[in-house]
Image (cartoon, rainbow, N blue to C red; front, side, top):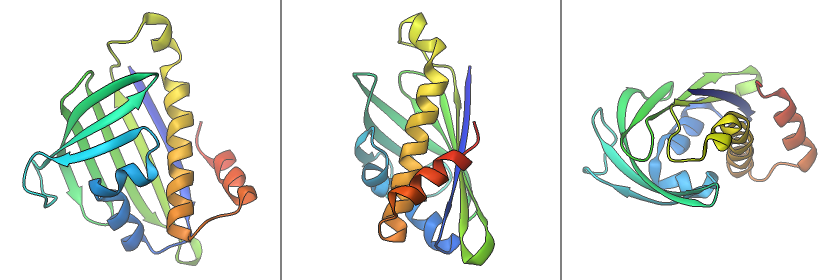
Length: 160
């Protein structure tokens, strides 16, 4: 079982950060491992909506379908794999932070399968690094390009 949480503060209002991050069509722009996204249901986010992702992780091409299981627009989004190589749940939460900024938390929980046992031992640290990089990229995109020093400080503040 892996349970990885990381967070970042983005100097943008919560509504805008949440709208961008929650839109599956934006995922390839800020998730380094996601290569393509395709709606399995009508492209309107609602409980039960499904989206297919094609990703590259640890040299493997993965295809999986996420189903939206909880939606609180601008505050929380939960999706879980409806079909894919291993059961996973992803949770985004957005809260207001000082100065009109947004604190975004990204959590992934699940049971990795289909990888050698030794890889499973290091799965959580590898996922944490990838998730941190993705949030730094999201921050950079939404803030119009952050400095390297700002990105490094943000990474140090992430939960371990």
